[in-house]
Image 1 (cartoon, one colour):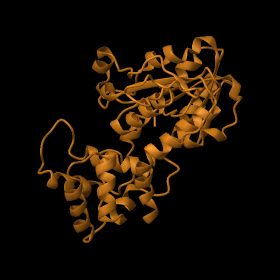
Image 2 (cartoon, one colour; image 1 turned 180 degrees about the horizontal axis):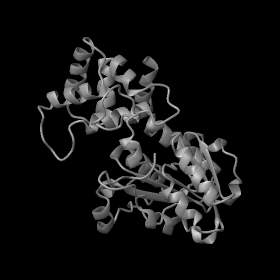
Image 3 (cartoon, one colour; image 1 turned 90 degrees about the vertical axis):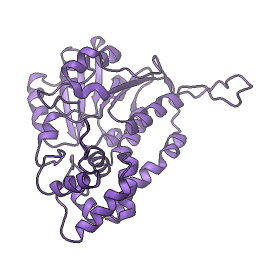
Image 4 (cartoon, one colour; image 1 turned 60 degrees about the vertical axis):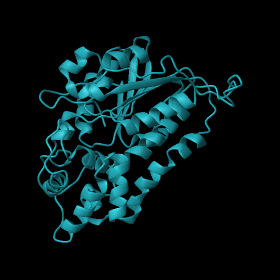
Length: 334
């Protein structure tokens, strides 16, 4: 899951300059790129001959790009097909890791790839699998119960018309299997072909993509396991693109960096087990110049934290977003 896109032009690694200034690759070290994609961030980091990158991506098509970069940066790039929640299993000299980076967007090549079915214009069987998946959007739309579909659409897509869309899906799938174009038509009919800047199907497609790829649990466990392998003094940096992702990342950094309030009438209670130092509490946003070149970057937010403690009890984090993981686990009913 890498890099935001400009559908009219080409692939752009979003907030590249800002990210590079934060992780300071000029001083040399090892970096983990958890969302390799088209390799934009890894390539920039590897321009310094003192740096090494270990890259991860679940998309098999990233392997060809990685192989090309390996020839350019001999013995300095390692690549593995995997989900980033499994980051704890990678073989790397952990004491030399300077930063772990996540870019949770999708590239132009992924959006345009007809085999992935991420586009509203795709014709045929629903898919949305990014790699290492157990089921597709076709199975979700044609088999998940009405109540479960409502939960997926409402929670992961923040779609106000979730009930009506789910009800219409149930009616239509009694006649035949619903294809990509059928789903778009159903959504248009429910929303009465309203013309807005945002495509009618955007929220439903987002919810299905999140559900199919288990993006919530991937992010939550990716953050936890990244923290566990990161040396103190090193950085976790995350670029998000929608409110659900950002809510999770914001809580992860801020909850484990702030002193706890016991009462508004008493001073803050100093927490001896804070995990992060935050240089900035607010996210870093793309400049107007970047947005003008790449309009798709406008929703990007970059947050980062510097690890200052090895304590790693994430029970509160897991409990906070337990309800989201439970919705992802509705897939067990497929």
